[in-house]
Image (tube, rainbow, N blue to C red):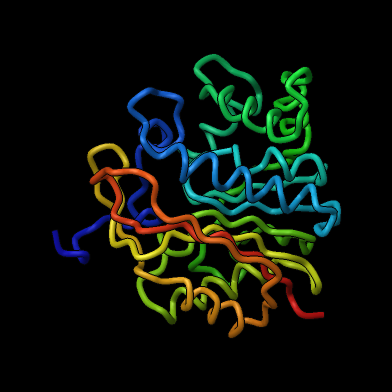
Length: 260
């Protein structure tokens, strides 16, 4: 299929529950666990437990309605705001946040977070800690200069962006523009923790195929430099699974600090 016929996540929307089942579930046939669950959780745990990331206010701008990337962050940040492109993802998150019937089961990731921290005897507290830290979930729009418009947000001490820029960008220039809009929400001296999908052209959610901007590690690092982010940390995990549901070759975890 030609890439121009792929759907755009932020334009066409997706099956949010199908996306979670495909890439983040605890099902036996879910082959992406090493890449989409274990790698990012280990990286976030390493960063937030190091003491190098400080502050009170964190913004998350990530793909779909996953929450496992926020467990470690909630140990340090008690004021977390989540920005999402779709109402479906906001509804999905609110079901989990308020522990409603039909909420997605994230127990396998809360267990993984507790194991990373050596607190398996306090398993129930992981979800409680994260829920209490999430203060608001808002819709965002990268077509606006202020992506949270009409809400004017205070600048964040830290931003997490997982798998989103390459899904909403169609060119190198657009990627850099979207990266600039992201860090406009970041304080000088604040840090962006970004997960990128490398060397991909598509991914599936349910039966629908979506666009992915093809980028490599060098491009992302150069993009950080162009927008004034100094790289503090970088790690790459090569693909650990075999599946035709997505054609990425690796995941990149990179931390950049905004200039003062």
